[in-house]
Image (cartoon, rainbow, N blue to C red; front, side, top):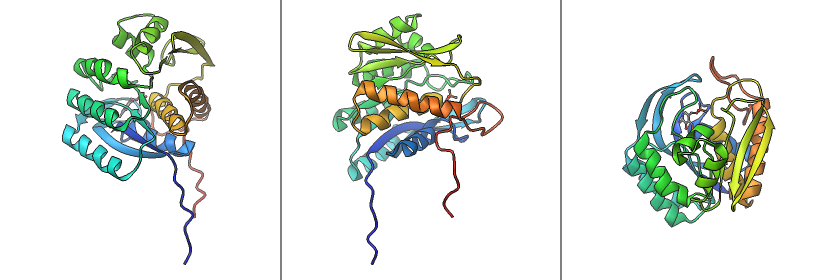
Length: 265
Ligand code: PLP
């Protein structure tokens, strides 16, 4: 009898939506985790109808269904970090807050409110609940500049990053990919300090870049990196995947996180 060579990668519990195009949402989380050597446990929050251009429908799952998914995987496997993507209702926020308190592991919150194509993914009541219940439980939050403005009420990304970071357990990375300019400037606020992370702008528009970055931070936290190092490593991974993207459909490009090599026969 052959003894299998069993691997035990750290498990990241991803609570995210389904994107049938495979660019964003839970598939982005799974591919990112796979590329970085951790295993994604996936609890779906909502279904969408979308392509690489935009989202046309959103259907949140019943909170009991989300709770049951999380309960099943948590009873079976230890969770090393949690990644939160789009959340479908205020009831889901309450449920997730309860699980965070029980699991006591690092949490990466991507406060998704709107798709890059412009469609609303989460309304004002969910935004309020994210701010009140999930931001204070987050080790890292990764709003884009518009989400940071909406959540903080502050127009300036630096001030927004500082204000939001003060409400977290760790830090806030306000991403600047959707802002104008020759450079992409991410504002990292952590421990009362603010750093500007400058990246050369890459031509093109992307679908799923925010999900990818947040999942990469969660993967690195699950592997034991400290918050600051996890954020830096994730930004580097994201940059590598944005300069070598995938063309999936006729709309935006998808980060090349898991480009198939076709090596299995
Ligand atoms: N669909 C789902 C399920 C998502 O989680 C997200 C972003 O987090 C999106 C769509 C939008 O992604 P993007 O704005 O990168 O197109």
